[in-house]
Each structure stands twice: as C-alpha cells, then as structure tokens.
Length: 143
Image (cartoon, one colour):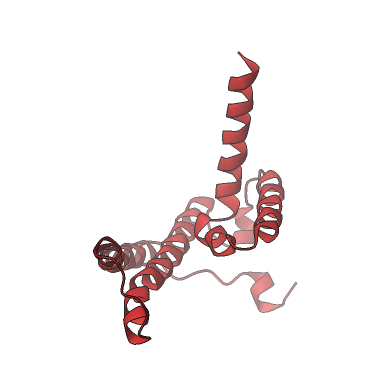
C-alpha cells in the first residue's frame, strides 16, 4: 500500500475516533477560536483512544446494549436541540431587525424545524423502549 493511502486511512481512522468522542455540532461553535477547537480535538482524540474498553454492566446498572440505545437517544436529543437553535435563528433575526435571511437559508431553517420535530418523536420512541434510567450506586453517593 502506498504511503499516501496509508496516511489517508490513518487520518480517516483518527477522524472517526474523534467523531465518536466529540460531535461536530459542538466543534462548530469554536470555528472562531481555532486554538480552542484544536485543543478540543486533541482531548477528543485522547478520549477516543481511552474508550476502547467495553463498559461494565455492573457499573452501568443495565445491559450494555440497553445503555447504548439510551446513549443513542441522548444523541438524538442533542441533535434535536441543535436543530432547534438553527430553526430559531430565523425568528431571532427577524425579531432583532437584522438583515433577513436569503430564501435558501430561510427554507433550511424551516427544514431544520421539521426535522427537529421528527427527531424529537424518534428520541421519545427510543426512551420509551429502554425505559427509565437505572439508579447507579455512584449516582446515589453510596460508593
């Protein structure tokens, strides 16, 4: 395999690990502060490297699969909130007498609102499926 391909695959693997530890929706907020974004990416790489050990069901208080589906529901809730911010940008700009959004961006805000509602319904289905979160010993201060 050529060095160029190896380097590309290495970069892709690193990006995949980072994505699993820190979402682009979070990193996007730090575009104006490049050094902070780089620091967050570094921390995400460290977290991803250390996250290789499978979780312990005893510590989780539930099966690993149930915890993973619960985590997916939490990710959907994060995406729901992020899309709400995008959708509300239209209302905020209009309410604060800013330059109006161009028609394409206005449609994207409306699309973000539609998707937010769909993601909210999907997250609720995930949450109903896994049931209430277990109370872990560390949550009660008993350890």
